[in-house]
Length: 539
Image (cartoon, rainbow, N blue to C red; front, side, top):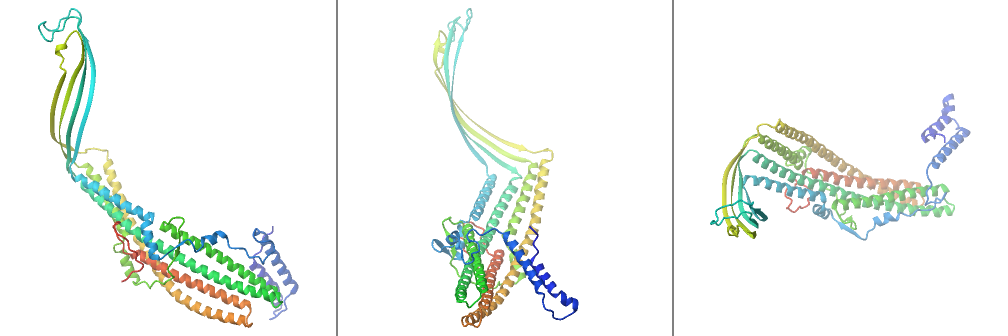
């Protein structure tokens, strides 16, 4: 297939062919060359046909059928249904999100885990007392014989064993013991840094939890405002399409009466098809906006949220840029979390360095026990009178001691670990500087966009007022026959564009306000406190 020449080049070539005689002869006005113009339009028509053949045919629309209006997809209609939905205000959405969002729940658990770690480290200041007990039973059988010609002990002794005697017996032992052990580190230079590191990590977890509240409120606010935008955009597109259908019906009636040419009808059908396309996309955007809000609120799949609040404009931001920056840096959980992380790494470094210092511990233990020995099943021709059937033995013991440990050589591994933790603390310091720059950029961007959106809203309101009056005049002139449908369409399109611009400016004001609020929003560091949504801030 030949390479298609762009439409702009075809128009330029046509104008060049028409104006070439005028340029050559210097004439101010020359009759257009009809054959050249016709050839130019024929080339343009062939190019458009070739381009149209590159696109696949619409399976839902019969070939060359322009009067058919395809239905809106059923899936979009179901996703945009009004029944079976849950209407939520912004405050209600924030309350649900603060209670159900999994990311915020994760931060709550992280705070609880950091608190447990601190309590575990604080236990190192106290002695460790261990209770131990044990019981057991053992049994063994033994046998012996005296060789012939051997005499053990005198014959009048109770231990006399005749020559060639044999004997067997069983012996069982029962043991029971119990005791206490005490270990206490008298001197441990690694203990205090470990506790301080755990306390810093608890502070880090609390600051991350506070920052997560700010991030979650911004996400919920943006999702809610976008849902409001999509709701209003569906209303605008639906009204636009309804007006186009009314005008199309009028043009169709005029065409059937022979009062307007076929071109007017084709143009209206194209305009109506474009309006339906925009409405379909608006419905898809609203369905997506509903699901985004449901996801951030962690709602059940069968629940579909809809915006219950009407679109209300947030007030102008109460601070200037300099004051906003100062307030954003003050008590900022993002910065405080990085500072706490750096502090924890420095204390870990101190703990590792303390491994090279001596450690003195006190140890004490005490206990008691008993043992019972039984001999039974004695057989043979000796020793019967010497067997003791049962023997009980009781005992107790205690001990005190000091242990001293001092690491003298470890090939430099501890020193390397100390340097590693120091480097990681320096990294957190650089991240702190970068985060301050990010906060400033975010706040300045939101501040400037907020001011611009307010200014655009003023212009958009003026444009809507003028377009609305113009549309009313154009509609009246169309109904009285003083204007055609082209003028009405152009006026209606301008009104729709101005309505969309006003909607976008209003939503942009609210979103930029929410972004500014995200940097200064007061938040709690305690997960046990109930979070109360705050939609605005006052000086």
